[in-house]
Image (cartoon, rainbow, N blue to C red; front, side, top):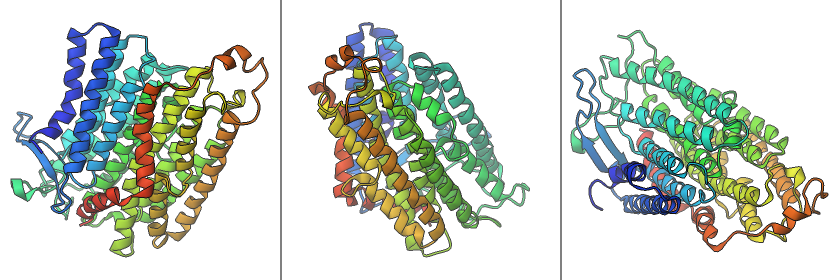
Length: 514
C-alpha cells in the first residue's frame, strides 16, 4: 500500500470538483468525470479496507503533518489514519459516494454546480472517519453542512429551503456544543492536546485515560453531554430528530442516499470514538454512570420511530422515519458499556458499529429504489400506487431485498447487526432490550405494508393513477444495475459471512474500550 492513500482518498473529490468548476462545461462530460472520480475513490476505499492488517491492529496508513495551523497556542496537527472501527466506514463512504454520482443521471438543473457540491460532500465525510485530531474532526464534521444545504435547497423538492435550513440549524447547534467540548478538553492543564488517540510509533500522546477537570472547575459529565447531545442530534435520536424526515423527503435521491447512508453514521462513530473512548476513566464521572439512561433513550427512539413510521404514506418519509428507529439500535449498542462483563460490552458496541455499516447499505438501497420508482410513476404517495410488480419486476426484487434486510430477515445484513445488539445488551439492560425488540415487529409491519401496496394488488383508479402513466412505465436499464448491485452485494455478503467485517470491527472496538 503506497503512502498518502488516505489523504488522496479525502481530497481527490475536491480536486475533481475544482477541475469541473474551471475546465468542464458539457453536462455529459461532467457526469462522466464525476463518475470516474468517485469510481476511483471507491477503489481506493476498497484498497484501504483490504490492506488493513488485522494481525497488527491499531491505527495504520497514517498521514501526519505537525502544526498544520500556524498558531502558537493551538497545537493541532493534520493526522489521519484508519483502525478496525473506521476502515469499514471508509469503505461504506466509497460505495455510497460512487452510487450517488451514478444515481444523478436525471439531474438537469445546474449540473456543474450539483456535481461540485456532491464531490465536496463526499470529501468531507471521508475526513470525519479518518481524522485523529479533534479540531480536524470538527472541521470535517461541520463542513458537510455547506454542500448539504446547497444540494437540498437548490435541487430538492417540496419545501427544500425550509428543510435545508432546518437541517443546518439543528446541526449547527450540535456543532457549537461540540466545539465547546473540544475547547474544554484542550484548555485543561492536565491534557493540552487535540490528539484523539495515542500513537507511540510517532511519539504522539492523545487524550489520557484519566481526564482531570478539577483545575478548570468543569465537570467531566458536562463535557460528556456536550458531545453526546451533538451526536444525538446528528444520529438522530428522539427528541432531536425532527430535521431528518423533512431533509430526506425534500432531498434529491442521490443526496438522500448519502444522508441516510453515511452522514448519520458520523454521529454513531463519534459516540463510540469520543463518548466511549474519552470517558471511561475520568475524574468523578464515567460513561458507565449514564449507560442505563442511554439504553432508555435508545428504546424510546426505536419504538417511537417505529410507531411514527407506521403512519407514513410517503415512501421517502417512511424510510426516513425508519432510520430514526434503526439508528436507535446504534444507541442501544453504545449503552452496552455498562456494569457487566467486558465481553458483553465489546459485543454490544461491535453490533452498534456493524449496524452503522449495514444500515448505510440497506437504507441507501431503499432510497435508490424509491428514486427509481418515483422517476417512473411521478408519485411517492403509497395509496396512489399498486400493481407495479408486472411493470418493474427488477426494481421490485431489489426493493424487497432492502425491505427484508431492514426488518431483520435472516441471511441478510440487518439481522446480523440487530441480533448482536440484542444478545449482548440483554445481559446488561434486559428491559430496554425487550422494549427495543418491539421495533422489529413494527418494522415488519410498515415494510410489508409498503411493499404490498406498491407492487401487488390492483392498479388504482384512473383519476388517481392514469393509464397513460401506467402504460409508459419501464423497468431499470442495464446501466442502472451497477449502483443497485454495489449496494445489494454487501447486504447479502454480510448476512452470509459477517466475520469479514466483525473481526476487523472487533479490533477497533477493543482499542476504544481500554
